[in-house]
Structure formats: C-alpha cells, structure tokens
Image (cartoon, rainbow, N blue to C red; front, side, top):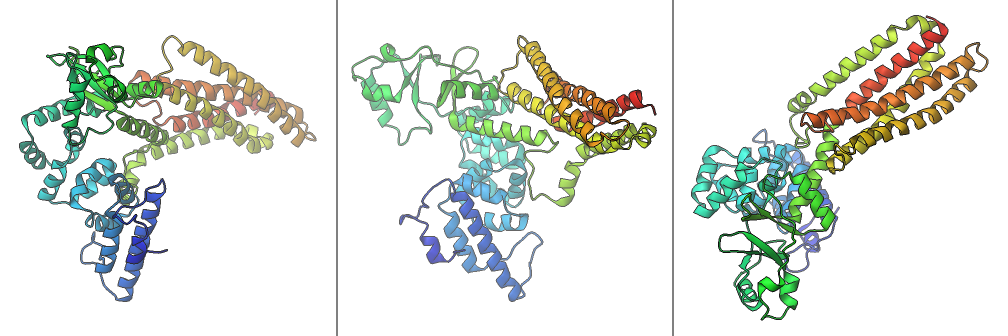
Length: 494
C-alpha cells in the first residue's frame, strides 16, 4: 500500500485538498493503519520501547506522512478514523490533528471515544477547541467537559451566546430544542425583495443549509418564510409580504426530534423554523441534524436489541467492555437454565420418544425467526410514529392472523417432514401431528411476544427495541420446549 510523501501528494488536487468521494475515509483509515504498522515495525527492529503506557512512539517521517494525510480531511472523516483505532494509536494520531479542528472532531466522535480524547487534552487545549464551536455544538459537549473548562468557555461568550447556550442546555436531550441551530437569517415583512438582497450581500457567508429566510415582526414572531429561489427570481420591487409563504411547517423546541425527522422525510425539507409557545422564532432545525437523528436512532435500536450501548468505544478497556455486557449475559444465563429445567421436567417422555430431542430445536428456531420478523416490524413502525391507539388493535389482530397462517403452513410442512423421517416408528404419525401442533402454537406465541415486548416498553417510556430479541428468544425457547414436550407427554405419556 502506498504511503510515501510523494504518493500522498498524488491524492491531492494540487491545492492541498483531497479529491472527495464516498470511499475517502475508508482509504484514509487504511493508509493511517499502514503507516502506523510500518513505523512500529521499524521501531521494533530498532528495539525502541514505549515511554508511556498510552503513548505510541512515532518517527518524524511517519508523523509528517500522517499530518499530510489528515490535514485536508473533513472533521467527520477524522472522527471516523479515530473511532476505528485502538487507544494508543488513536492518541498518537489525535496529537497530530490540527488544533483548529479539535472542536469539530470532538462533536463528531461518539461519547466513548470523546472521553478518551478529552482525557488526553490539557485545560488550555480544551478551552481553545471548544471556543471555536457554535453554541448549539458546545451544548452537545457540556456533559463531557470539566466544569472549570465550561466556566472559562462561557466567560468568552457574548451575552447573546450565553443566553443561547443556556437555552440549548435547558431542553431535553432528544428534543428539537437540543438540536436546533441559532444561526438564522430573518427579515421584516415591510421590506422589499431588493432590500432583502442588499441585506444578504452584507453577510460574508450565509449559515449552513440556508434554503430560506424567515419573516418576522418587530417582536420576533414568525410570519412566514421566503425561499432563496424566490429571492433570486422575483422582481426586486415586490414587497416581502406579497411573496412570503404563511403555510410553513413550524416545530416546537420541546417536540421530539424523531417526530421532526419524520416531518423532514415526509415533506423533503432542508430546514424548518423553531418557534416557542408565544410564536417567536427561536432557531431552526436543519437536515444535517435530522440525518444524525436518523442514524443515531437506527444504531440505538440495533444495539439495544441485544443489550449494548450504542455510544460505547469499540476499543474501550477489556474490563469495562466486559462489565457493560454482564446484565444481558446474566439474563441469558438465567433463561438458558430455565429452558434446561423445562426440558429436564420431561425426561421420561424424551427417554420414551428419543426423536423429540432432535426435533425440539426446530420448533424453537422457527418460532424465533417468525417472532423476530414481527418484533422488527413493530419497532420500526413505532419509531416512525405509525402505531397509534386507534390502529394498535388492528395491527395486533393482523399480526396474530399472519402467525396463525404461517403456523398452519409451516407446522404442516414440519409435521410431514417429521412423519417422513420417523415413518417406520410406531409413534411416527403421532409425532408428526405433535410437531404440527407445537409449531403452530409456538409461532403464535412468538408473534404475541414480538408485539407485547415493544408495546409494553413504549408504555413505560423505554426504548421499544431494548433487549427485545433476548426476551423473544427466551420465550420461544422455553415456551417452545414446554409446548412441544407437554404435547408429547399428553399424547405419548411420560
């Protein structure tokens, strides 16, 4: 893999910028890992040792190559690379990042990695990094920063910025207010398009993702919106009040960010105004924040389903990682012992019909797969806000009916297969019938549990995906064994 200074120059467009594409971060990570690996091989040959348990010695040549590679990267790409590196390599690369990018990178990395980076920075470095951020971004870091650092950062803010920071910190973590941007362009309805264009030309740059300006009255109440496309294509003499849209979508700061994400997806929005209870414009929500919301919720659901923390550092210490998994492993152990006790309660039946031992996993596995389909569908529908009190009963009825149909179909197929396998046994035909009935009942049970777990968790304001697959597996295993062996005992005796 190429990584010399000359070869690194070939990645650039001649002006110090990498040619961007979707694989840029992946390629950069491979290069970083290769540079570090080659440099460490050289250190081992030279028999150099670490001077600190967390410090990775890097030669001047390797450091120069890494700086050349990292300098033009977007902060999000650097953050992604840091998350993919073990702790010692991460800290070595972090020390080579441009200081003016530190704040943006801290915002982009997950909580677990951010903690390791902040621990490696001194007080002055942290203050300098945070001071480069907007107030809404500073609010994202408040919980991770030492109190004395936050106090110094607040001292350097203007009165308006301090008010914005307090406002952002006052909203719940998953609310629109915690995500909104305070950089907004507002105009008055009494002005003309020509005056608005003159006003916009006074900006050095417009706030990111500005697709519209907001029309407000003297007290800051939102009256309407005006798109940039309208501003550029309309007669400059036209008054703003004659052109503005008054039927715009508005968001409340206390509204859940996932609900806002659904509105953005439904109406293809780039930005939306955020207004308080009095109708005053207090900020805006932009599509880049919505993309983060969607990604974070998707990751949270995937990790929560198996009892993991989505913000955990993948290279956290072995001990801390092990402890974080104890809860659900303990639950699994208890459920496994419970399933084994269910099986042991039917020892007599299994001794009499040995084939039962071979068929039990089939009953449990089929019901588990069917239940997971129902669980996944419901969790997604809840996340999309499509499940309401009005349609909940219809959804439950539909999924139960689907499970009955699938149970009859696949139970019949499994029963016929069991009969075919053991046709020469005296119990062959009855074994097939038991297999059919157990499969039917367990698939229905899996669907009911797949519906019940997320709905109960949502009722108690918990994440509907939390531990769902673990609880479903427990039910379809233990319940499936109980149903299958209980039916076998009923028909064959025990």
